[in-house]
Picture 1 (tube, rainbow, N blue to C red):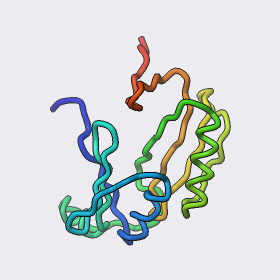
Picture 2: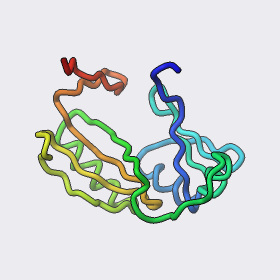
Picture 3: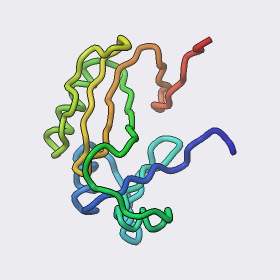
Length: 142
């Protein structure tokens, strides 16, 4: 298996609400057969009905509340961008679950959840380089 992710699919309770939320954050998606696809750099973020997603994965539908065991991260270039994006998420209907601050590791970040409870960390970590197109370049941890 090559070391890459092609699609991240978020199971949502209300597709129209989820589409509107991400549009309010500036994401532009295309709806095809009750599924919304967003190009996100070299991968795609997909919104799809939570029950259909569970069925497609051969899993029973799980609870629609509480932490689902995964967090998405969006790195930005400045602390101000962290603050601005968290504020935009709140205005769009998201919930700020951890206000922006310097975290235990030493960089500036905060977390919001979308209307379906998916957690997004917004972070400015000067140790993680962002290329012009926004691709993340990990440092040499050695």
